[in-house]
Length: 128
Image 1 (spheres, one colour):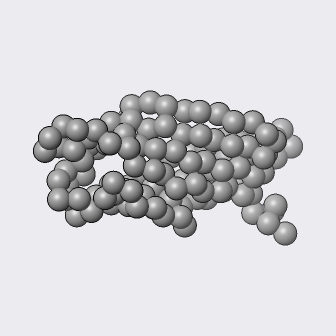
Image 2 (cartoon, rainbow, N blue to C red; image 1 turned 90 degrees about the vertical axis):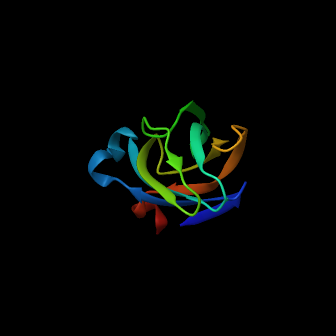
């Protein structure tokens, strides 16, 4: 589990290898990640956008950017948290992701970025 605090928001990431959706013979490796976003500010925040950098150990880099997370732009009250699960496919057994969320302060409508900590994804059989 990795975590990072920036802009008064704590991001916690947990990853899971998805063997049932992976096909190592065809270089298809699926991972799930659970993210918890804790708002430690004195104002509500709205998650507007996400921006990911996805690194595969075969040397490839992908960028993914879009509105919200899993089709939602959640509003997180002060002291509250929001959690979601999503997934990432890789062409090798090891990779990593990192990125940012664009949030909006619901009091003054100013936007700011928070860092998503870098996290690694490993197929369990590669850990030997």
